[in-house]
Amino acid sequence: MFKVLLSHIQNKVDLSKEEKIELQSFFVFKKLRKKQYLLQEGDMCKHISFVRKGLLKSYFLDEKGGEHINMFAFEGWWISDFNSFINQEKAVLNIDAIEETELLMITRDDYEKLMLEIPAMERYFRILYQNSLVTKDYRLIVSSGFTAEEKYTQLMKNNPEIIKRVPHNLIASYLGLAPETVSRIRKKISFK
Image (cartoon, rainbow, N blue to C red; front, side, top):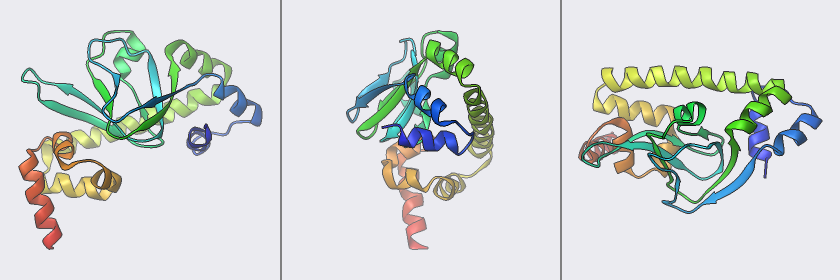
């Protein structure tokens, strides 16, 4: 059950055999059905979750009920409303399953305890947060400085799994484009 998580961690930091065993005691397993919520806006985010299997989306709703996707989380990704998780404030994000999903979840208290008891995990999360900041900065550049076609082709290049597994209307929301625009770009690219 912990193979994917341990592999992900080992790609960034080294853990002893004992630490790998101890690490497992901090997590709880959860399954989500397709379209089932992990978190809803207004609730408190009590866990940060590692995707063992499946696919989730994180998003907020505008005043008209329009969905604006913040991120997708595939196998080997972490997901949370991090502000709510860390600051114990109400969540502004919704998180739900696009596919049947299996998660390994850790509470805020256990997250803090984990980093104290296994110091390599603090380094692991720091590496993740650094990578996340770089990714968010790049995404801001793409969203404000690229054409619709450039946004889509960058997504295809950098995240081909999204194109294969995510419906095009959700891709459109993620890119900040109309679904018709994404359909037009897909047709144009397929003719090339």
